[in-house]
Each structure stands twice: as structure tokens, then as C-alpha cells.
Amino acid sequence: MTTSTIVGNWKMNTTLASAEILAYGIRDMRVVDGSVDIIICPPYVSLDRVSRIVSGSHIRVGAQDVHPESSGAFTGEVSPDMIAEVADFVIVGHSERRQLFSESDEFIGRKVVASLNAGLKPILCVGESLEDRRAGRAEEVVRSQLLNSLAGIEDVDGILVAYEPVWAIGTGEAANPQIAQYMLGTIRFALKSNFGAIADSVPCLYGGSVNADNVQDFVREPDIDGALVGGASLDAQSFAAIVARAAEVAG
Ligand code: PEP
Image (cartoon, rainbow, N blue to C red; front, side, top):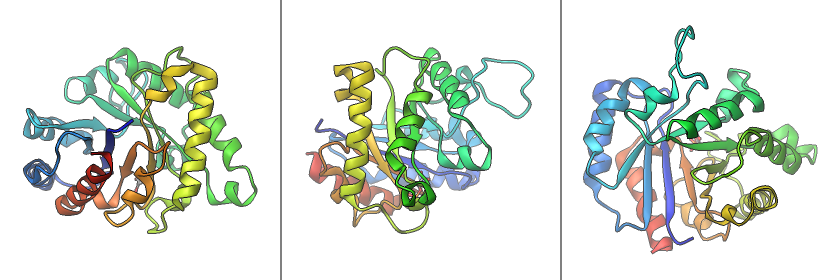
């Protein structure tokens, strides 16, 4: 795959006003020649406004989470159909959802199915904790998160997978690119074994303390098709620099 995908996860940051400024900033950098797919994921309340700002540009928009039901008595939740009105992508299974909100693979799997049914492309996050890695179970944990979260589907077309080791998220300590490649190679192999050749076209991303200085080390690896970026996506110049560096490798 020669196209890179760079996803910005704004998490629970930005007000309406600052989200607008950030979206204009990223849109107006115009650093891209088409070799990088850019997806930005603002908080729910800014989705509509950000979508309108980037409409007509090469930037697409995603939500950071979704509920698997299509409507009903789920106070505080947002359904796939609601998101599909304003976005094309949705992050599911982020480690912060798994850890802080006790989300299970089974629940995340329902989100994957519901998102696809609503026409959204899920960005499925998997990743081991430091404890898992130290205990030698990183591969086992990641494979089981992946396959259990995909248990309800027959075809992985339209899905993106992000390998995000928990110990690398927001710590400034990115994974060694060879470790990331090894884990994403393992993910690709598991996808191929279970879903066939289509796995070659599933964008497989690395996430965890990615910045403009290290992004090329990741996207040069054969099984790493891009990056999921948290902290460095909150500044238009930093994010644009990551996209520009990824474009140098992809192009
Ligand atoms: C993330 O939140 O998915 C993430 C990768 O964060 P950071 O880039 O800040 O490590």
C-alpha cells in the first residue's frame, strides 16, 4: 500500500471555538499531494462544525466512539446513524474506553458491526498493557482483542486497525518501530488467516506518541500504513508536519 493514513484523535479536548480554529488550521496547511488520507476525530459536539469546515477538502472526519444500538433509552450515548450524518469514520475500542469505561471485546465488536451497517468505517484499536508485555503475552492479548472484536463480521472491507500499545499512549515513549512492525505483522497475519486476501488492503496503523520526528520510522515499515496521533494532532502545525513527513515516504 503506498497511501498512508494519518488519524488525529483530539480526545476530550477543544471547545467549539478552538475546534473550529484547529480544523481551519489543518485544512489551510494544504501540505498534502493525495498520498496521505487525513482523518480528524473531534469530540461529538464539534463534529458537525468541523465536517462543514473541511467539506470539499481532502480531510475526512471521524467520531471517537459510538454506541452499538441505533436508538432508544441509552442516555448520553450517540448512535451510528447519528454519527453517519456528520462523519465517515469512528474510533472503536480505544484503550481509554477499554480501561476507563470497562469496554469488553464483545461490546466493541457490536460497535464494529453497527458502524459498518450505518456506513461508517470503524478504526478498531487494539494494544497490550505494559504488564501484558512484561509477562510475554503481548501477541496473545492483541490477537484476542482483534479477533474477538471482529467476531460478528465476515468481511473486513471498510475496517481500519490501529495497534496502540497502552504503554506508548500519551507517554512520549513511542514503541520501537521494529516492535510495532512485528505486532502489526502479527495483526495482518491474523486478519489474512481469518478473512483472506482482503487483509492486504486493510489500513493497519501504529499509535502511541507519534510525532513529526518519528512518523517516518513507522510508515517505512511494510505492515504500517499510517498512524493514529493523539497529543500531536491538537496543534495544526505539528499535525501538518506529521502528514508532510508521512507523505514523503508514501509519495
Ligand atoms: C491516542 O490517543 O490514540 C494516541 C496515540 O495518543 P498519543 O499520540 O498522544 O500517544
